[in-house]
Length: 288
Image 1 (cartoon, rainbow, N blue to C red):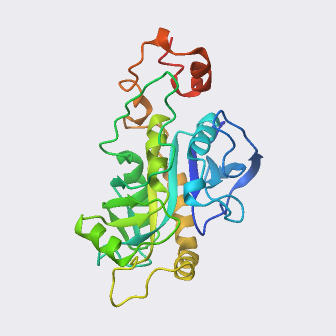
Image 2: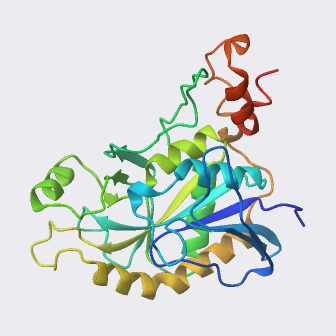
Image 3: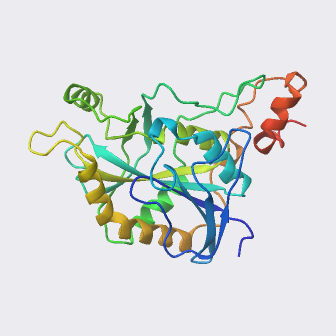
């Protein structure tokens, strides 16, 4: 058994704890970027060490734009996590992604405005590659884990992240559809990009809760509608996570763990000591 958690689950709307964890511990951490959304819970699930973090805090008191994404990912990395599965409620922007379905997307379109998007700066510049923003290997494993539950799941699609916390206007929703977007949510950006900077594998289990506001034959999205679908899907989500934990490949077969190798451009001797210390967890193997 692994001595530290290698798989993390970031729970979104409707999933605030991780059923089935054994030998549970709670970690109230601080990071150079502040405190995570909530204490991180670790334990054993299907013989795999797993960490769980409630993205919106205990009792869902943190708005999407207020989430400290840097602290969340940094804290998970500090515990030894290598792979992250995000649980995300989302709206569908296409007819065939039906409320109640699950999606493992393969692209992101970022329309957020007011969020910190990088760990880097303050004298250390990194240009991270995110042409394919989700880990293909972890996404494939997650897809199989969801399929094993018998739920309807789709592979692929572009996940549009908006600033929120409000829902879309009809004009916005129809424009997003005209762009070819598949899903709309409020938290995947910058979470996916920060995960790549932290050299973590990252994927999303997206729960389609509604048709946003574009569908003429369906009621516009509401909090009640979102929670109703999420409550129905909770068992599917927890079973899929258990399936993933049970069959998770111990060795990573992707390039995520080397993402910074070609991203750092600042000459090491020019990095301020305080920045080097702040980012040591991420860059120590590159800044000798």
